[in-house]
Length: 581
Image (cartoon, rainbow, N blue to C red; front, top):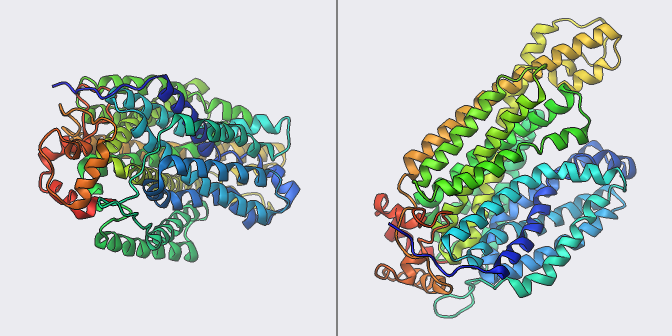
């Protein structure tokens, strides 16, 4: 069965996509861009240890906490308008960060950068729905979006390392300005506005401020608690914060169930074509972020590379992404995308199993091959998951849907860092206790040796030659063993994600329905908001829920529509009055 293509995008739309990808790259880079700059910032601003942590973490916390709010806001006031506001704020905050004269000011400005980033990220993905109506072209656009987003995190340390060799630490923020200026100049001419800020009767819908506060209050302490657990182990305050966040999350969910126009459509989240990809993305980021910490530390602390050299080598796995993401898109044209996603997760599991064989004396190419295999498989699966979820969401909910996807990724990354990091740390501590049960009398920092590889290196620097070599050899072997055990955990999770994709998502997204033309989303949205019955097959209301983001067009049709066969009982409820937004 073939999918009738929608109107094809031309040069203007592809140029618009390129313009939108620049801020996306910088927003994702800002998560990691301070890794090399923090020593220079510490020397200049003299922050306390706690302030230094907040300088690093504030951006990510605010970004994660506000994604859902900003996605819903973009759906109401217009995604193009929100992109422009986010770009302006991001640019102004970048200048303020570059010239910050105190640690307190830099922390506050990093929060503003997170606010600007939260405005940009879901809107850039949602605008792809407005720019590309042809399923095949939209699939390629989502592939580019996913690759840019994941590559930016790895590129941040490289860019900051290169800048810091020639300029002061503020330059890592000023590089944002040209891209934001270009965005502000070109987006009004290249990108159409898209929003559903009015009800079916034409009245302006009110933004739900209480739901926004609840979502922020739920996500921030949960992610903070998970990251603190990963960094320092259990502590009462982060644990209580996470528990409080979960309680606020329950209040948020109960409120969404009662609202006629909720911030998050829980009925949509319960559908296979949307909820399934959200979970798949969460599991993918669990493995990606959880292993990234080990990968970079292995290159630096075990192989002895400089930070910049290690950052450059860490970009090599992008070669796997460049091969597998287009290959996965091509396969999805011919076979059920569930099998392609399952294959991507299986490939990533194989890459993690290769990492389990890495030793302290393994050749660098072997480690990079393992990293390329697992990164390629993960991004291929994530790309198809993003396409499926974006296609399953009604057009008027595209911003909220993108925000839910990205919030799941943030949560998955935090869980991966905490759980896989804890596994690796436990193995390291056990191995060190067995390898070095007793250190020479009077050696300071004996506990640090058994806690982290960095602590062992610091202690070894003050020991005589043979003793220092013994400590470092044991610590590097223990760290590599811990990395291997963590990779086993990642491989198991990826194998489970592959089975989940095949079993739950098989048949979802295969359809012969045509892709809706521009403007049909409005009609669909009105039908949904009215709670009226869905029109007959082929009308705007029905097709609006089943737009495919398949890269193939032929068999990768609509997520939600393919879902109807196995989820008919859910469909009518989703189209009720609460689905509008």
